[in-house]
Length: 264
Image (cartoon, rainbow, N blue to C red; front, side, top):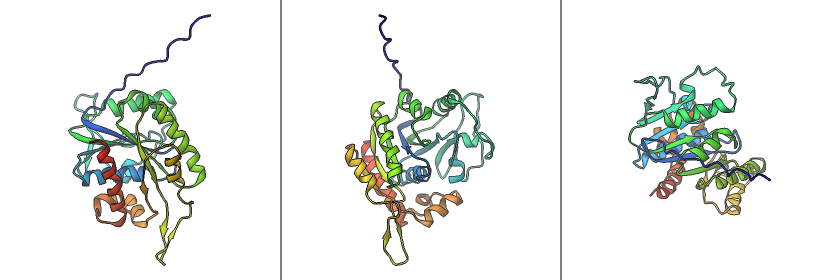
């Protein structure tokens, strides 16, 4: 009998121009991951870090809307792109390269090629950290990052409802199997504060925290449903940038301080 070939050995290539690469991931769509990724990036900026934001969601890019980006990336040599800068953050997204209403009808190999372009052919300059807004799920993009990009840490975002947590557990195991360090879990849309001052937990309670404990991962904190967070995203001005002392921005600050410590 012929022997099985040895498993393929992947070389993890660092993103040039940054000290640290941080993935913000969610195994389930619609849990607010992109809003968290952008606001977390600016919370890190508020702590003195020079940031970049890489929108790796090829099929559903959100960064142009969340940052109100209109400018297209330039290239001096026709090969490498210069990221767009806004609010002192360097930004890149597939959404900046196509019309916002153009669907990306691509198969897996084209997605992988696009991810390699975004990670290896962008001229990031002197960044302390690049925050990567990942697409939901555990597909080609996640595997490309996990196997071929030097990643310093990942955060998993979820709502506390059971349906979302089923996919979170799959996401945790994917990162563990590909040796990506999970820095912790965030419970988003954890509650909203009513006019009576009470917290209402409409999606359930403590599910993300319990999942973190089950898999021996750090729990980074709860984030609420808040109108100001939503309206700032719609305006393209991240709340942690426009109002760093807002009650929600301070919650992001606590999470950012935790993450910054893990990079030191």
